Image (cartoon, rainbow, N blue to C red; front, top):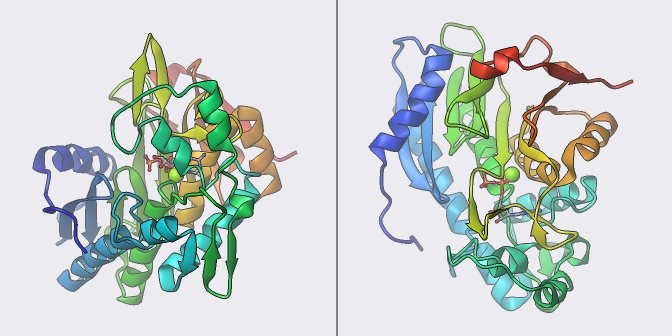
Amino acid sequence: MRRGPRRAFPALSLALSLLLTALSGCSAAPAQTATIFAMDTVMELTAYGERRCVDEAVSAVYEAEDRFSVTDPDSDVARLNASGGGAVSGDTQALLERALELCALTDGALDITVYPLVRAWGFTTGQYRVPGGGELAGLLEKTGYDRVRLEDGTVSLPEGSLLDLGAVAKGWTADCIAGIWREAGVKSGLINLGGNVMTVGAKPDGSDWTVGIRDPFSQELMGAVRVRDAAVVTSGGYQRYFEEDGVRYCHIIDPKTGRPADSGLASVTVTGAEGVLCDGLSTAVYVLGLEGAKALWRENGGFELVLVTEERKVYITEGLEGVFTPEGSYQSTEIKVIRRG
Ligand code: ADP
Ligand code: MG
């Protein structure tokens, strides 16, 4: 079932496309594009290929939204939440399996059962509030990805436990679209799901895509990375938050405390070949903080990081040396490099 009209947001999308094209310098080669509003964000799809590639990508986005939206009562996720589990198949099963692996990889900094907490803080309704300690303690008892069972295509959730795939759904969807495009022979494409970016191939002129990273403290860019066939995903407290009594509360919850993450990082950008990994890890690393990020990166492969701390310090992992370029006021900032050994 579809929810409400699907709208296009020309002004916003123009801003987004300017951000990307200004940096990527897209040539005048014929591009197929679509701008849609889905998953609560403006999305821009650009493929250098046949029109049907973009149309199929748009369908893939709506299909993912129909499966994964936690607020649409007809979605697969809402159905599982309403019944404490049930049968799953296809993409829902595959994403749940991958998401649970990422929860374990991050030792629960990513936790797809965090929804009772997200809801209590008002992030799904917009009716923001600061829950009391007793309420949070009660809700924490209902969370824990390790209590979700997924066997033979059947999910079972403990009493009161609710799934939320919001931290990984866009990355997963970007992977799906990239797969569709590669199969269709698209050599060049840009998928921007509200700042959750995936590049397919190189730019039409054969050079790398350049993807901008926003400064968490202003509307400007803090830097850019040059990539091809890679996702670039940023999570930050500045993206969605509310303020009460001078305190800022962001939409990423630390599953250990039940409170908005407050790890000292202002933004986390993750780049790598797999969109869902980058999406899940951007959320998790924002919770883990600088030291946790270093450890996670040293123990695992497949991704690189750009971290901006609340003190405006910048860290990159060594794979991004020569790939990351600071922009604007960050050109005079020392860039610290996190190394393996
Ligand atoms: P966005 O989707 O806004 O770009 P993220 O990918 O970081 O940002 O996902 C944040 C969303 O994931 C929140 O809106 C919430 O629904 C959910 N969430 C919040 N904290 C966590 C967490 N620690 N683990 C898993 N999901 C989370
Ligand atoms: Mg994420």
